[in-house]
Length: 82
Image 1 (cartoon, rainbow, N blue to C red):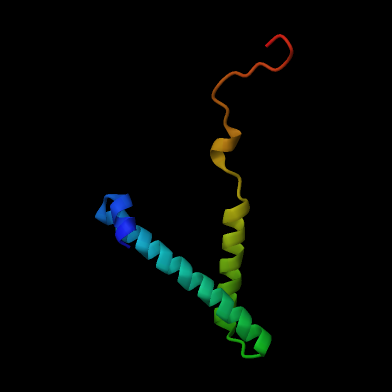
Image 2 (cartoon, rainbow, N blue to C red):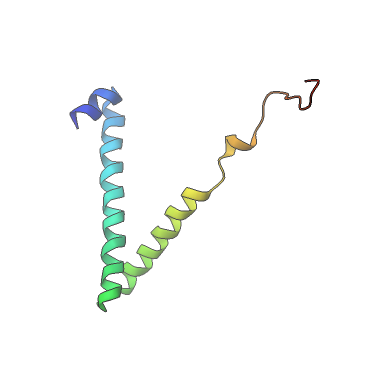
């Protein structure tokens, strides 16, 4: 945490980073727990629905198109006489 605080150089971003890490760890733990409960037969339907929704959100965030990658701001000439 000391290294994060030193690197962030701001209390606001330091606490945001700590909250993000804790929240992400909780989401992953929820997914693992719910999938484990599904395989052992001890299903919590509401928790399983949240876990599946979170898996879908994570997959979407991984494969969504990056907006700046489709935008070209400079003219590029293609060919031998470029």
